[in-house]
Every structure is written in structure tokens, then in C-alpha cells.
Amino acid sequence: MLHFLSDKHYIGTNRNRALTAFDGPINNRTQFNFDFSYGLSSRTDVTLDIPFQIQTYNLHKPLNRIEPGATSSQPVPVNTGADGVGDLSLSVGHWMFSTEQSKGNVQVSLGVQFPTGDSSAVSTVYSRAVPVDISVQPGTGGWGIIPTVQAFRTFKYVSVYGVGTYLINPTNTTGTPAFFPTLFGHGGEVNSSTDSFVTEFGASVPTPLHWISPTIAYRITGVPPLDLIGGSEGFRRPATLGYIEPGVIFNLHGHSVSLSVPIVTYINVRPHYVNGVNQNTDATIPGFMFTMSYSFRFGGARN
Image (tube, rainbow, N blue to C red):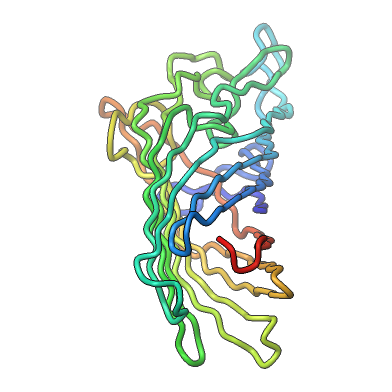
């Protein structure tokens, strides 16, 4: 489970204080990921990931800019959001070395993303159906390829790990009109179907209690300005974010619970040019997030 509230606005690495929490967007997101893994052997497994989101995207804008025929310039609330299942993914992973020893190993996996999430969700804004912002859309609008590499190594007093994953999305655009041009009656621009990436490396330290382990990690995540494969047209918000992530893991009788609070330390909202024109103004960034996960292994020593 992931939860965050985004209300701080950035251009590049600088805070955009011209947009306040009142007139700038506030993005409130809760996401659940349900993962089911089955061991085909002691070294190979297949995993199904099902994401589900509950998300709102709210702001205030002058009524005469969003409601045809209105004359009042008084700011009024614009409340939008989209809930639902996102893009499912199915992946196969393989440990490169024997799992009989637990000192360390490397796993490579390859997954496929299915366009099951809605990439054209709408909200009603003062009697008009407006597509929600790209950050709120449950789906990316295309099939994807997901290569992942993860590794760990256990030493006497510490265990270290690293993981890197990249979503290759060859689809150019989703075909869904962008939120702000539609809201203000400009039209014409559509959302981009973007690549994305996540890299994380960290460590955990055993304690005399054995069932509890503090962790520390650093996470780098974001959306690139250009996709690896296919077109990169349409509206997107390219950015690279870095988070320091303190946490703790509890292990009790096959049950594992982890808690962490990623805190943002680096923000770079990058420009995205289409036909030489910068399509972006800023992006709304959370100062911190809250994550929790629970896992349980069925079948004992079986796959």
C-alpha cells in the first residue's frame, strides 16, 4: 500500500511558489498492489501484479475560465479524481545462482504490462465531462515491457540489496485530451503514453530480537522526457525524484510486514518539448510518502 499527498509545485529543481496549495493542484493518492507469485522451480517464479488506486486531483480556478458563459472571476473548486484497477503486469523471474545458499543472489525478470487500466477516465466539472489529469489516470494506454534486475548480499552484520526496473511503453499517446487544455476550452493536446523507471538500493540490519529489522534505502524514480521505443508526443510531466527511505521489517511465523516513509531529497521536473515548444509548466510533488506491505508464503518448502 502506498499513500501520499502532493501539494508542492516545482519547475526544474526549484519550488514554484507562484502556485499555492489553494490555486495549484492537490494530488491525493492511495494505491494498493496485490502480488501473487508461484514458484515454477526453486529458481524460477511467475508473478502477477494487480494495482488498484483511489486518487483525487483538486484545485481552484476562476469560474469564467472553466464554465462557458460565466462572468464571475471568483475562484471556485474543481474536484476531479479516478478510482479503479490499473495496468496489470505478468512477469517471469529467474535466480542466476543456486537458492540453496542464502549469502547472495541475482534475479533477472521480464514482464508484460497489459492495458487494463482506464486511460480516458473523466470527471464532471460544472456540468462538463472533463478527462482527469494524466497523473490521475489509472492506465497508461498501452502494452508495456518490464525488464527488472534485483540482487542481495548478506554479510555478518548487514544485508544489502538493489533493484532496478524500467517500463518500456512503445505507444505514442493515449488519445485522451489533456486535462488543462480541455478544462480551459483550448483543446487539441492529448496525453502521452510514457515510460517510467524505479531504482532502489538499501540495507537492513539484524537485531537481537531477530523478528524485527530496521532498514534504510535510497529510491530514484521518474518519467523520462523521451521513450526508449516509439513516439514521445503528447503531454507528459518528465521528472526525476530521489527519496531517502527509512523503514522497518517484522517477520513472524512466515508473515512479513514492512513499513517505510520515503522522504523526498531531490526533485528535477524536466522540460518536455513537442515541435520545439515546452509543454510543461510545473509538477506537483509529495514531500514524503507512506508505504506498507504484507506478504505470506503458502506451501512451506514447496515452490
